[in-house]
Image 1 (cartoon, rainbow, N blue to C red):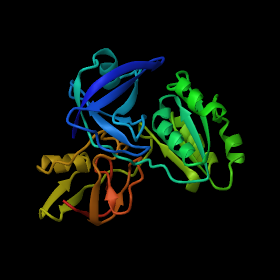
Image 2: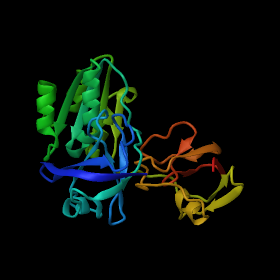
Image 3: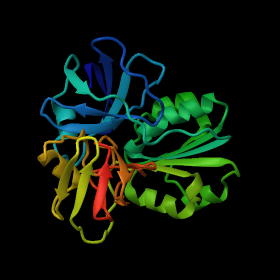
Image 4: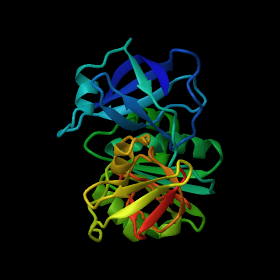
Length: 292
């Protein structure tokens, strides 16, 4: 964890504030476009936010939209956080990295601009041909985008089929925003060229949960996981705490390595080979051997 001082809080769009975070004990950890952090609030809630500032700068910047049905996080940030307050933040994690390409198309919906903003800047600086279509009732960072990127940015509802039809042969697409937009993007863009990030999990249907055993290879312990428990909960009850954040399979903070067995991946991150996210994922085999 890192300790940071809230250096500034400023409104940047209707219902959206940007927070500048400065390290209290020296520079904050380095990060790359697409990364996010956990912010532990003084009310003990932990929320995940994309870093949307300059990776080469000394500070972090995040943006927080007041959610209409806030679960206590965005409401607290807007109503109670003030400059000068010290908060705990995690080291950056990046489950949405920018890949090199000759052409980048970015599609943002509302607060979905946050991970895409530093990506757009980095891709443009690399010489890539970049475009951004940004839509929503609230348009965070609109003036900054206009000033820096001019007519490479359009503020309009995206016509995704038309964008897909005009995609160059070497273009990659990054999309972040509301679920209907992401679902349509997954229908119209080639899967191998599309990268999406979700802030909340999709509504999906899985087979009924079954019991299995989690074998912890390093500790020599075997932990039963009942149908009504998550793997993360079972490990914690057994006295084997695992770091976690969203507990919805979105943030990637609880990543574990498995050594044997067949995981039932239910996350939104897209677990890399040999990895799983125990907050949502289960096992299709009777035993799942973990590197714990």
